[in-house]
Length: 103
Image (cartoon, rainbow, N blue to C red; front, top):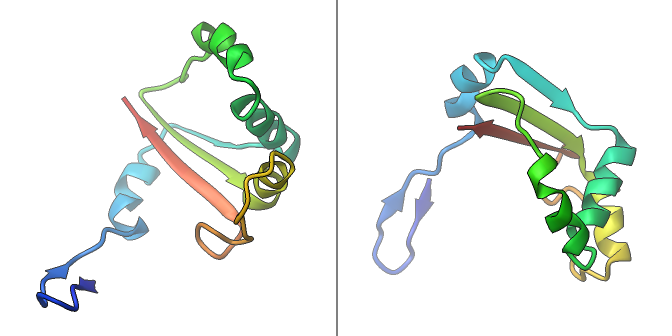
């Protein structure tokens, strides 16, 4: 719950528990290796032309997909790409970044 100090307006923030049924129903779950996380970060923060040249090769293999990776390799690459202000445990305090894709 977030309360606006000026207006007193309360806003409820969604959390992981609300996604639990969707995550359980996911037919495919991937945990990316550290090497793959580094490669993806390198591609994402390179000049961009390499990524655009390969975008037609990217396919999500299911209508719903759970993807997870460790934060440290990603943060390490961001620091190498001079993305200032990157700190550890930026996302959830446990060192992993989860994502649920659905189309």
